[in-house]
Image 1 (cartoon, one colour):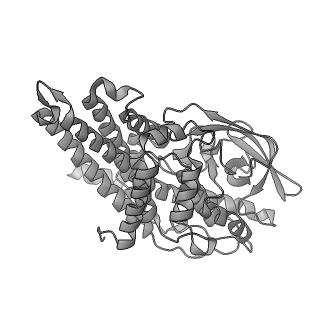
Image 2 (cartoon, helix red, strand yellow):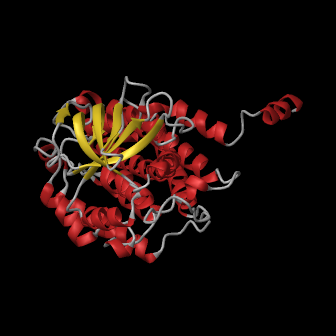
Image 3 (cartoon, helix red, strand yellow):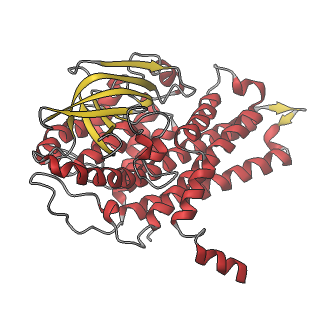
Length: 439
């Protein structure tokens, strides 16, 4: 692994940081989260038009930049530093790669250019609080998280011989779901006998029976919504004229979600590192000017030691996040699949990787766990070292504390991320147990 960044990667980071310093200060963030969309639309258009941020990891043939997860992680680290409220994670991190992996050629040509240009924002709708399970971050992705039988989650039923589908159900805690122009809905189909999870495309502004309600969230910079679907017409992602291929498509869906989960974990880890680093920088700045007993509190040895420990933790988390992005980006290419019907895309590499190619999945899960834990610790210490002012609305450090706590609730918990990574690596297997006893 070459740990140094290329000139292009340095330029992406430098340009984005300069723009965000001008357009996304603490007061700008507080104003943006109180708008109807929950983010600054003019800044989003600027990030999309001038920097191509939402299309950073989208192929060039669809209007994207054609970079990989490392570049998206670097960009997310910068957005994490300022707690940028934007649909970047939901649109570019979750929905766009799923459309690229599973969509037909028509669906890709229709949806990806708009997503890459930032003209179309999107949200991934999964039932309940199951996003980590759906992305394979906290356990094997067998589709059980989507609900079973007639109860729970979102149910899908085919109409008109499978040419169209209707959705019924509810999902909560949908990231940017209240303002997204496109919903990618994970729904349970087939009842008990032929249970499977499929993905469906819904355009909420045109479809009937869609009710979206923005929810009160701990972290206002990452807005969430409750989505209700009442007999809503939807299009199957990866639709094939032959209904026989639908059960096979369900296998691809779970594999694609797991593959996307690896990339999202690396991106989220970098974002958390950026937030932790900025919270630490603000705390150091405060310790230099806040005086107690006639001298800056940063001159006290106890405070120096706490800040030094936080610095080491941030640097370790950054190394893990960068390694995870590199590992995910170099995942080996898969053999093309056949027999699914003309027009279907191939499953992503990680979805069909041969046994033994789990290093990227393990690295991404561990990096996310370490970054989330580091962000929580750094933000908590920042509040403590700022004293009572650290928990007031007027001060900005409380925003970092809320982001850290909210992200661990949304994408964790940390101990389950580590447990699944350990099981994926085979640390809890029978052979590992015998070796441990022998030692």
